[in-house]
Length: 273
Length: 262
Picture 1 (cartoon, rainbow over the protein chains, first blue to last red):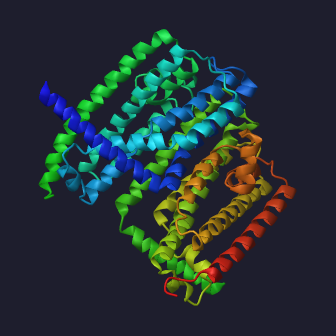
Picture 2 (picture 1 turned 90 degrees about the horizontal axis):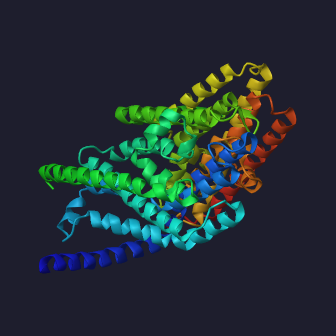
């Protein structure tokens, strides 16, 4: 029991240091960090407008009336912020210029650095995003049914979604051991996910065949599922089964990442670093 | 004027030779653009499976609009973005002085000296998509509508060019300006759809303040026969004014610039 405890204590200390480091980095570049968050608002605002003007003419579609559409995309901008992950660019950079070796010398797995960086980014930006989200809520007046159970379910689904997105991006990052185009492959896969995972439209509005596939893909559990939980498009009773599929994806991607990481390290060592 | 055209030819030749060395990059770009166009078309298909018209626009009209979006996006990525990024780097490194001492208009030189030819393929594919949309628009395709489309597209590029020039001129006062281009790109995404869908304040923002929306909406209105001579004249005037104003601002910025060594 004691060694486990000590290992955990060591990890905790590493995290405190890493978090402190990331936090001060972000504060240093707060203007650019802020501008990056605008991206989590652009897409949702555009698709909110498109679907609103369609619903205004056609009436409710698959249960989404104007209030529902607005709720979906306002919550989407919140979900996008908490599920962003960008380490594929950073990791490629570390491999290209060889600085991964420096990170490997540290007494913890380099992945912890990315985790701390990711969490720091998401927390620090709440300073301006919370006022922006509040403004959006007051301006658009989305129809969101409030209850404590739903808030809790949303928080859980959102946490799972951000872990899932992190693992998904992490697996693609590992490709950087083999190719300089890891980020390009990631973008390809991600664009497809955006299309069918609840990015440009709620999954219920996709053509039936696409809908059926979409509900199994990780991107649905990254975007569509937490949003639908948040706005009440999914019954609370159906939340646990979704969380189980989401957990299965996280576990599977973790296994893939560990495998790729071990293979990649061997290769990285072989080129003479 | 002839001297400028000759220089433009030389810039293009050198850029082409540079980019020809990276053929893998070229095919990767082409593939990525095709993919993103396919994504846009599938997205449209999803939208129009629920309705015939979005804010009065038919699917074929929006196809033309998305074509225009990619034509403009290709030009920005091939010409405006790389050249203007270089100005920012040079002001930071102090090498802009070499440009300013050359015996040609500094604005011309900084705007066109390097053309990222590979990125221009996006414009060609955008044009193909726009033409496909035009072909399906049975009512349109008269001489006037074709003229209105091309003319509005050129005016739109002039407006975008002026906007980038003015934005980059700010570098003489604030060295870290490149992040501001992030705002441009985020707003530019709004140009993928007709401006009529947006709420009033957003429409004003992307029409008058950061004019990214008109650049795609007006040409597409032109081909749909909804862009009257009056609007076209007003757009011409606005483009002319923005070009003049931004080049004056550039000259003012250069005059203000104290360079690296003095």
